[in-house]
Amino acid sequence: METDCSTGHTTAAETAAAETAAAEAAAAEGTTAEAAVAEMAAPEAAAPETATAGTAAAETVTAEAAAAEGPAPEMAVAETVAAEMTAPEAVAAEMAAAETAAPSPVTSGTRQRQRPRPLPAGTRLLHIGPHKTGTTSIQGALFAAKDAMAGHGVAFPAHSRHPMEAALAICARPGMMGDARPTEGHWARLLDAVRATGKQTSVISSEFFADAPDDETIARIVDDLGRDRVHILVTLRPLAKIMPSQWQQYVQNGLRMGYEDWLDHMLRKAPYEKPNPSFWRRHRHDRLVERWARVAGAENITAVVVDDRDRGGLMRTFESLLGLPDGLLVEVPDTANRSLTLAETEMLRKLNMEFRGNGLPDELYSKLVRGGAVMHMKNTCRPAPDDARIVTPAWALEAATGIGAEMAERIGTMGVRVLGDPALLSAVPSAAQDGPAPAAARIDPEVAAHALYGALAVAAEAPLEHPAARTVHQTSSKELVRVLGHRVLRRLKRT
Image (cartoon, rainbow, N blue to C red; front, top):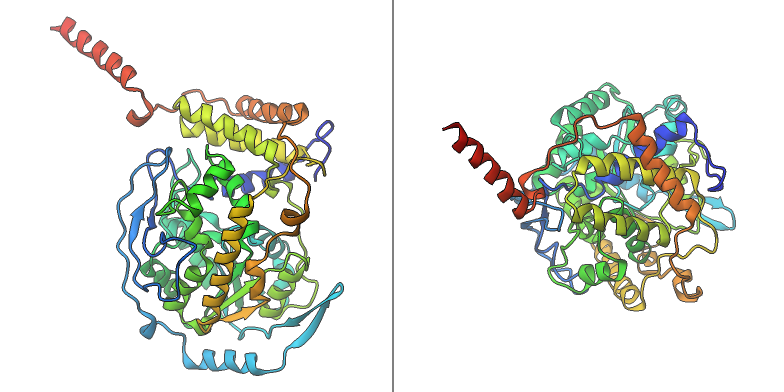
């Protein structure tokens, strides 16, 4: 529950939910000083403004590069396997019949939508995100309603709201900074839970499936879940809305670059992969859909264009696809998932600069900064209406609308089912067009105090008795020479 900064307190349940969201924020970029994940350079890193429908199907891989990211081994990309990897004809025929049947109208407020027909009974619906498209909201609603869904023959096999570790493991992504890397065991446990549902319809949701690095990984996910039963759901939002939200999320995982500088790198500086190559892997939505359609078959893909004006619209779409009654899925408030204000983000970015500049271990950042300061600040401070917001400059909005229009056009030619209005992908937020100039990004003393208290509280609860040793990469050359010099002198004295 959100409270005013001056009086806010949180319950144990709220803290637990906040910790889960903090872990997801950490893995949103998912790189450490020792490990980085291979990311696509071409065509994924092709100029985002000028990619065409003729993009090659075969993709190459490049290593992620950022100040806090280390080298990673390249991963081989599988050849296109669409011909052998389509779903059985019976399921495809049933889907086609459902699509040709007249859809039933559904009214939400003053807006009217068309309700999609349910997927075939026994389908395993895999929601792959990507990030910033309503994933946390739908995951919370599905988890809260898992018992009620079971009464309608729909299973939610994950043991928590978000099976993040399982998705990270199968996609070969590292976990949050300072924590152990997710293992195959996480993926195996999720598979066991899915198989235990038998012939029931089931639903799995994680935005980290969108990070699958190549066709081979996607094929394994589809095969492990049951190729003859899997249906892929992709949720999409306008790029102009995603950009500021994704930037502040990256800052929560250690990014030090300012917003306009970050936009310049993502939109203007080829190969558009620094400092966060995962951005275009996730949010070049046409290529995301193309990758999964190439492996799973276009007839087994549904793309949902989220309309932010229709609150609850995404919930109703999931209900329809799963054959659930209207109103069963309800959004669960989650203060720990809120975006940071501009002032909060800038405060954290400056802290990141100091933290990284002094070579402190990732473990400290994970526990004290993200798990302490940021989590407590989110839980106890409600942004005020007049707080300075993150404003995207006009040139970046223009680039985003162009890319969005191109993505919508390409997705329309792929043969996948599209729910919602594709034109929304090139929409510009009205606030960006009509809003007043942003106020100065000044952090409220109350907010700063709560952030500091959060870090101190975590340190007091779980003191680091033995601080993590720094790696060679985290140690300055001068200090290395000094340490080696002392060791040489000690050895000389022994002889």
